[in-house]
Length: 82
Image (cartoon, rainbow, N blue to C red; front, top):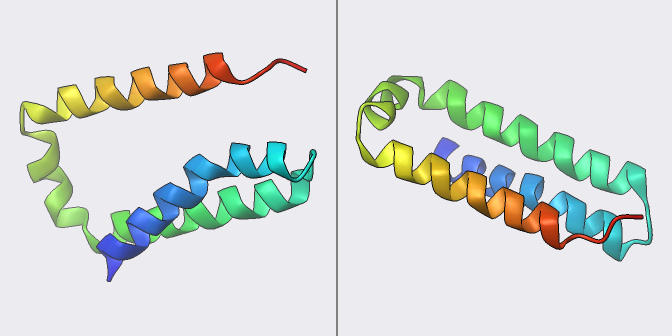
């Protein structure tokens, strides 16, 4: 159950900036969505604490981290500055 909640939390967290732009600047809605995502990711980490060491010991974790970083920078670069 924690893995599913972690995935849903990640989707909520990453889509909260899009919600901010779609709702024409509704900061409270995007903040609630982001905080809900953070809470669900926290549940994921608390329920899968034993498997985190296994994840970070693999060589693929470097490539996952670099992919996430590049994606985040690409999303931030494509957003218009207001």
